[in-house]
Image (tube, rainbow, N blue to C red; front, side, top):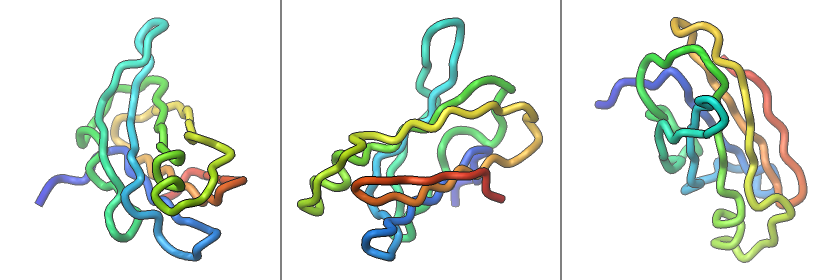
Length: 114
């Protein structure tokens, strides 16, 4: 079994009231003025990604990009937001950062989870 990464996510589809399966997720880090890919993953049957990069990351500015266009297209639904990009500061390389998303075709919300 793979080790849980320092950054994880959970995506729930509020319109369907269930986990958002098979959402493409990308974790990037900002280095100078460029964004460098750390890891790519796909949400599992429970809408989770627990292996999004390594177990420890250096402090810095990171972002998670969720490919909602592909997810909603597969369901035959429009997507007002073709992707959701969440930028956050990883300040402690010893802490776990959980970034969940609640989405629908025309809205989304997020928070720092545990």
